[in-house]
Amino acid sequence: MELIQGVQVRPLRQIHDERGYLMEMLRSDWPEFERFGQGYVTIGYPGIVKGWHYHKKQTDHFVVVHGTAKVVCYDGRDGSPTRGRVNEFFPGEKNPMLIKIPPLVLHGFKCVGHEPVYVMNFPTELYDYKAPDEFRVPHDSKDVPYDWDVQMM
Image 1 (cartoon, rainbow, N blue to C red):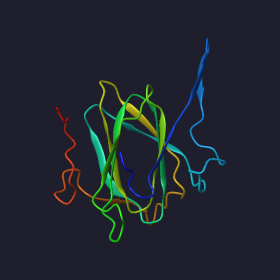
Image 2 (cartoon, rainbow, N blue to C red):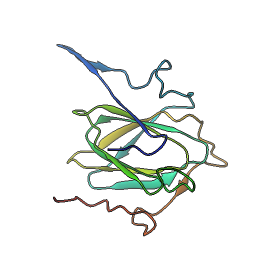
Image 3 (cartoon, rainbow, N blue to C red):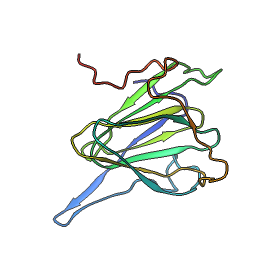
Image 4 (tube, one colour):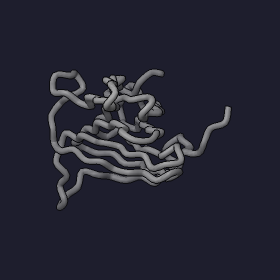
């Protein structure tokens, strides 16, 4: 799949032993790292879509730490060489990855399993409670060429 300009994906490695496993999610010496604003976890319940939204300043760094998600990005940026492109990823415990999502790229996720999905995010900016850098678009907007339902081939 050709990635949207600015979107980056890094497969993550789980280091297992008899006690469990360790997985690095984001390091300051990786090229995906820009800066640290904060870290948080968001939980999605089965079948629920959390999207669309975008940021004007903030870059997101998504890692699924429990369950499986369908993470989707859409490039609606004027002047972007990848305008109109959709990227769809299925990160989870069995497919660990870091997804870097740049400013102005619409994105969201859907829990695709039978248990909640836990998504860690390491945005580059602190959340500003008085003036949030968070802009929403309805999940079923006709302006975004994507259907969140299961696609049967």
